[in-house]
Every structure is written in C-alpha cells, then in structure tokens.
Image (cartoon, rainbow, N blue to C red; front, side):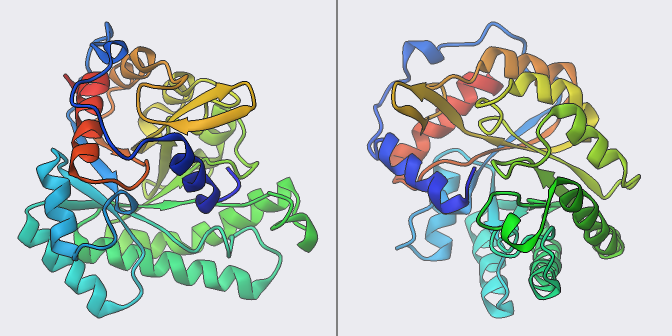
Length: 303
C-alpha cells in the first residue's frame, strides 16, 4: 500500500462505524479445520478510540473479547511506562509493536540521515517491546514507491541489500532483548512473491528475523493462503484485514465482507501449524464495533 494514512482513509470510507448485532450468514462457519496451535486474538492500537485514557482503551479491547494489543512505537519513556501500567490494570497483554519510522524513513534510503532515523525508530521499538512484554516488532524493511525511492536513486536490488545490511546491525539488540524483528510485506513494491519473501528472511540465518503476514495485503496480486503455506514456520505474527475489488477499483472492508478466502486461510494456518497472535488491523470504533470484529475472528478462524 502507499502508506498507513491512505490505508486508513480507505477503511474510513468503506466501513460503517456502527455494527449489526448478528454476524452475516457468509461468516457462519468455515468448513476448514481450526489451526492446530492456539490463536491469540488481538487488535492494533489504532482501532481504540483516541479520546479515551490508555486504561479505558485497553479495558474496551478486553471487554470486546480481545486478549492482546499491538501497540505503536513510543519514544517517550514515561508514556511507555504509562502504557505498560494501563495494560496491567486492564488485564490485557501487549504482544507486538508496530514500528512507526519505516514509511517516512525507510531502511532502503540512500540518505544516511534517513536510515539512521529508521534505525533509531527500530531500536526504540525493540526496547518498547521488551518493556511491554511483546515478542516481536513489525518492520516494513524497504519502500520502493516512487515518491520515496526513485528520487533518491533507490532501486529494487538496492532496497534488498541496504535493508538487509541495516537489519543485520539490529539483530544483536534483538537477540539481547529477546524480541524478534518481524518483516511485513505491504504495498511497498518490495518482496512481491512468497518465494522471494521466504528467501529474504532465510538469508539472515537468524532466529530473530521472521515474517509478519498480512492476510489482506496479498489479495490484490495473490492468495494469502499461498503465502502462508510458502512461508510456513517463518511466520511469527499475522495481521487480519479484508479487501474487496469493486467497479471503481478496490476498498478495505470488514473481515468476511471482501475477497479473502477465509476457509482457505484457516486451512493454511492449520497446515503450517501456526500458533500465535492474529491481529485485526481495521478502523477505529466503539465497543459494539470492536465486539463485532472479535466475533468475526472467532467465526472465521478460531471456533
């Protein structure tokens, strides 16, 4: 995708804030077997209402049926401590961190200043994860969209070699903190096939670099179930979105309302023995909306 802001704009225009009390008939139960490992249901921080305190946001997530949250990078140490305290009080875990620096300051840039900002963001994210008890940080490893790459002379091979060089420099810190670097494929014109994604991860030869699969991101040019089967044990985290092709292009929709083949995704997760978090990455909403999303995840992947 072009960037996180544009993705959320699509979500806002395509999903209703209010939720129906029941689930659509199309969600009524997948025929595929449930994944053999336990799936831990979570949501991203941005789905929680901004006008609430940290503890009330996290209590809302818990009350909606979620077990964990993926928090955002938080450079301010006092704020990070406040988030930890709120999670403890709310009785919910923070199990992953979404790095915030990689779009504006990609590791693939030719500008050393830009790269250092990205590295600083990842170091902060890894330390946040250690503080909060999370085991992985999401990282978009490179950006090749025209506005952020070609103007500074970054081409595909450059993105591969530069990003790997910088990630290798982060591995000792990840190992020290016991937090994995989870590389995600987004609409960044990089890692365009599951075979390539697998090769990219394998070349690190490190248990601290894994794959973060986003079910919705692959639908435009492939099949998420294929990516899951190809990546297999490399997968450490899973994002849940849904994507629908329409006459005027495409839009992001609620889980089960788009083109994702959820029975096949469920089957693929079972086949590779995936065990861990499945994190909804949708629009912000109230308790009724979040509860509906939680029930959809149960119906599509868990029950």
